[in-house]
Image 1 (cartoon, rainbow, N blue to C red):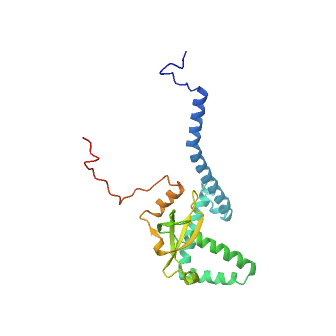
Image 2: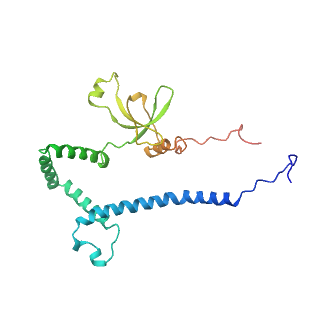
Image 3: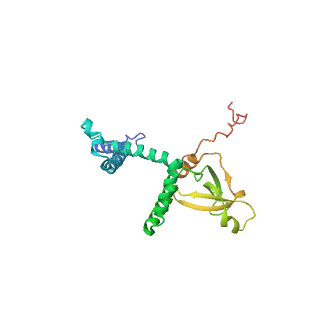
Length: 233
């Protein structure tokens, strides 16, 4: 029997149910990400197969020769077809055909609006251009003395650069939010108010997503030398 005067009371025993519950939750933490990832990939592959394979003639489908319906064949066909179309579109004949087709679409009132909207979204999401962020920066936001991480996109041009009440150069900075860096604010700041960082965009994004918990390793930081004050006897 344990009394309040005992110096080393026995630790509280963990019941069997608590141990099983802890093991079950740990198992969920391990299984859930893997299982959901596999399920999502499997579902997307099945959706692409269901969309692409009906467009392929029956005599050209692999199951006609091997007798097995292989999952993922539609994905392979889609990738090959997309690469071929992209290769043709880069050539002179392909560009001419695209311009000719777009000239026909421009004459259709409803189709023209739908096509132009989808094209703009596709170019913004998939096109490889100079719009990607290349440099992380540090700015004072929402007031002086409070610092925030941003991504430099480009130099302000056109009417914004002309009408802004500043004599220097303006830089457009995307200020991401935590923990979702895909949303944020577009700010136009004087160049002298933007401090470029040595960390990469990926490292800065990890810092934003983790709410300041994951800091990149500073390679330029000097290793402090041992002095007589810090050296032991």
